[in-house]
Image 1 (cartoon, rainbow, N blue to C red):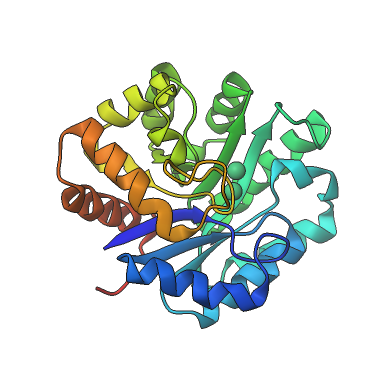
Image 2: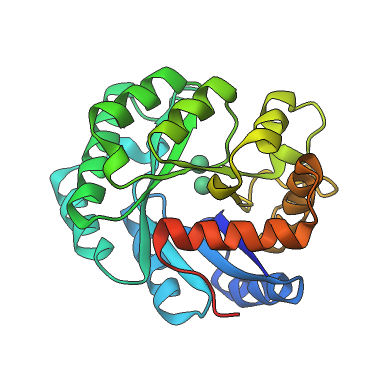
Length: 259
Ligand SMILES: [Zn+2]
Ligand SMILES: [Zn+2]
């Protein structure tokens, strides 16, 4: 039994009629839990609807750094109205993306800080996206006291020094298909070394498919390849890794799929 700690199943990511067959393929591969992630207010509403109606799906609602330019008091109020639902287990994805810079950096920071405060108000963990901004991401998490609610660093792609500071804040590290890429040495090193009670696996579907599907559209069932790679790096059976990561998700967000 595996859980995909971060996937996109709604809006522009997957057409509605493809959702059920995609999840059915994943379940057939033993993937029974899915954290579906919203990237703006409209997408978050779709994710909430899915999480309320489809067994095994729970929601992470937020405004992605790419969409931070859309952040307004009205968006904040709309998000705040949705995140209290018990189907919602995380706030985000939020954070900083200084690689693509699709929203101005000041807007990214403002939306990030506001979502950390929202998570603290409702006492739910954070879903963090960080790219090319490691120092600023950690500084903001530290300044805003994110250790109070913790969260996960999704699609972990930083190094051991970053991991150590995130772990100090109580955060979990979620490994994606990158862990199957032989050249991603720093990420593979962290996947081998990280404490067993702080690791998760995810797809970030439809992006970043693991080997052997690299370059193709990704889907939650493929989390098994990432799980196998992380298990191999750690020298443990994949069943053990599945058990660990399912338990870790439950420890972080209070939810695990029924077995
Ligand atoms: Zn992301
Ligand atoms: Zn994502």
